Each structure stands twice: as structure tokens, then as C-alpha cells.
Image (cartoon, rainbow, N blue to C red; front, side, top):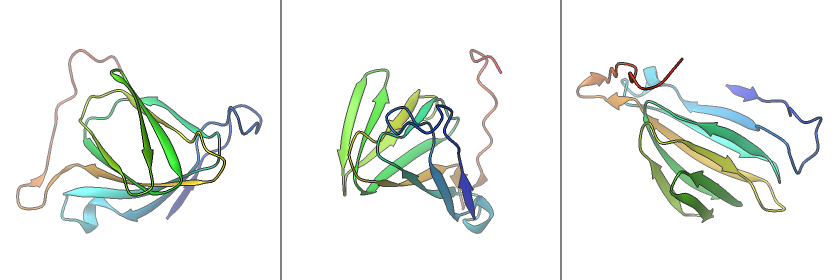
Length: 126
């Protein structure tokens, strides 16, 4: 399954927002353990800052990416990975001149325990 995102800036690669997402494995295919996505970002593309209720593991398959966090910006190159704990504000930016491919594993629970259910944090507004 492919999901595409359009640029909010009219297509200027330096300020483009979003990218292409390919769903590699759905939660129901992993016994509720995780969802596996492949994100493709064109040069200059970025994903806006977000906060997730799930832990995320990011594995850089191709290119380079900046991972902005509250504690600073991590720069990843091919073969490197990062773990983004749940409720951590983060984004993704392709600062390079070539496309970037990132494998994103969203840990929703453990197959043996069934899906993890996390109540919404009380300090976040909808």
C-alpha cells in the first residue's frame, strides 16, 4: 500500500513537506506487535515535528537524514539507526542531494501480549 503526501509549499524542494510512505507490514500481520513503514523523502523534503504514543525505530536504508529532537539534531547516514521513545517530539529532514529511504518500525505492542493499549497522555491536548 502506498500513501503519498503533497507539498504544502508549492513544490519548492528546499521547503517541501512530506514524502511517500509504503506500508511494508500492517499491525494485523505482526500479531499486533508493530507496523513497518518505508518512508521516501526527496532532497530537501521534511516531515513536520510530531509526537507518537508508540516507540519508533528508524533505520536509514539510503541517503542521509536529520532527525530533529528536543535534545538536538541527530544526523544519520546509510546503515545507521535511531530509537525514538514514545512521546518524544521528532521530525525528519533530508538535507542531502539524493533521495532518502527510511524504514520506520512503529512498536505498538508485543505479539505474545497482544496489542499494547496506551491511554492518551493527560498533558497533551487533542
